[in-house]
Length: 132
Image (cartoon, rainbow, N blue to C red; front, side):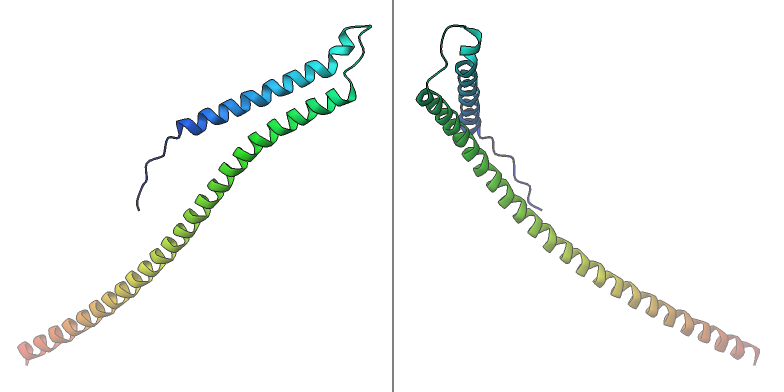
């Protein structure tokens, strides 16, 4: 089998870490803005438009991170499917090889049995010639 070295994708990891950090920051800001009015009496809550904007920002951050993750997951699924197919075909090849070896072993045993029977007959005939 051909073993391929793992590909180190440092830039992709950095992009993922950056995206995760952005999502965490967005969620943190959203939570701060959402509950800030509860901590400060006398200050009204965020307007509905501001809340919708914050929710939209958080949703867009989550979609960006999820999109990158889904792409990676789809790539992994494709690679795993190719590996599964390769393993399946290798399993079939090994089964064919085993069947061939079993037939060869059976033929060798049959040949050995015939040779042993012939040698027994020759030995008997040789002993009869000596005695006779």
